[in-house]
Image (tube, rainbow, N blue to C red; front, side, top):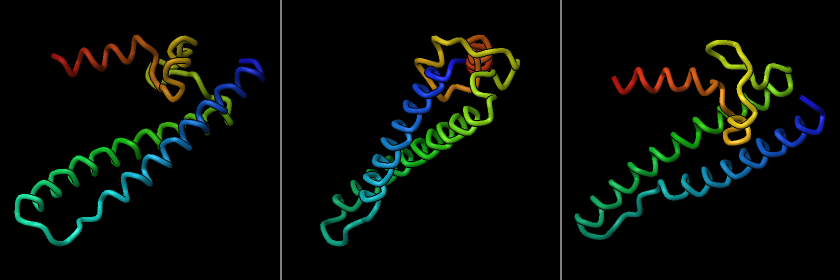
Length: 115
């Protein structure tokens, strides 16, 4: 990987991390239940809070993956499949810079879940 490619990937990952931080802050603000209203309003707020918690969890998981990708970039292990230890294709890394699995290993896992 060239120095320029590494810089581009690092910029992408840092931008994604910043976007995620902003999104997580916005979602956390939605977690507060406001007192008052009728029972239906409260039930709707509880349901909305549940979906917000799921979104926060997904965002935190993705933030962890982005942080791991940045650490791997720094250590020189970026772009290697965690399963087969072969290089992850450039096209996949362009699409998902925090990917830890090559297309083949990811497909095997998804096929196993579908079965």
